Length: 354
Image (cartoon, rainbow, N blue to C red):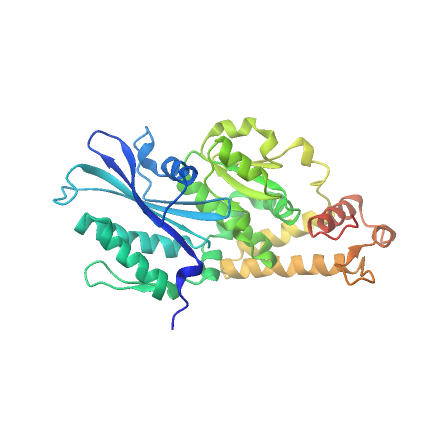
């Protein structure tokens, strides 16, 4: 018996743009909040004035992932008043490929029947059995889409070929659970880049830090500010004037990385960073190495750093988490930047005595 999707899928919705140019929330199952509806209307490209069609976008809001596929309706007999529509899925897991495949099938069903009822049948089949099959619309099998594959779908090598040694700034920011903001005018570019970054800290396998599509909207920024560290993607260039939102700012179009004033001290680069940077670049530039091998190389180096850090910790009697013995770290007489990094890493890993 396939693992049912009941734990993962949260809902399905439909947004239509009619011949008058109005984009409306038409239907959803089960129900959704007004807040979530507003958010999804903002994310789907149908309310945009710029007429750019984004076939697929994804992101996260308050621990729910959203996946939106949008299609243009070409001379349809069943949807005569509709020019475009978006199918929205909300779910608990990060898996763009899985939900892109499923929303495409739902789109085909809607194009054919013009009624949400048929879509709901397929949605419920996937919810309960993890599978939906149909001759003409294609079939979808949930277990074909492993989470690990989603984690490895982006290319670390591409990031290193763009940023070279500066990739170590991104690595350091992620290790220290800092706030990274990425800007590019094209959402597809942002999604591709940001989804790959958590792989730099593979030992955590934590994609919940990813917010690949954020608007400068109060609700969204409030939600973002409740997260300790994050990777947030914006298409609005005004985000560069919001230093309250980031420790590290990535201008993707110009390949520039800026460390904000308040993060400079924690992010001081030294000999250790240079070593890590060289390792990342060497590994990524090796034509015989796949992206997953590069991730493995970085991960081994990370483990070495964490093992080293663990050697300066002590376990208290009450069996709590090991905490950093700062004196022991000081006695090692590391270069200041290395000691500083290890101290801030201990803080990020919650190893400091409170």
